[in-house]
Image (tube, rainbow, N blue to C red; front, side, top):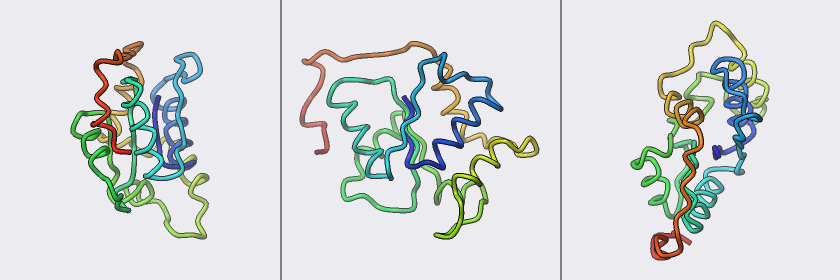
Length: 149
């Protein structure tokens, strides 16, 4: 499961999988979840931790602060996350602003054979091709004190 902030991130990684990485997300049973922002990514990572589901990776932007950043900070430290600085559009040098079609721009960027996929995205690719490394913790392994909400 790959958690991303929004639709532009989802289309970008879906297209990279299909066009550049040779990953069939349907056959691989891979879900790319648009979480509605950085707070949503943090929420879904927290739910995974709460239920002991460890087969996820998260991508979020650095551009906004959270009230409780510890969960995403630890996700990054644990090698289960990638923070894009300052955001997806800035990271890929795409147009920014409220009047920009971010989804279209991300899709076109991922389809453009002249664009080189950033080395920073290798951790996402590696996670997606790792196979069936699902790890469900038992109830005793989940510490409710570790959950940020």
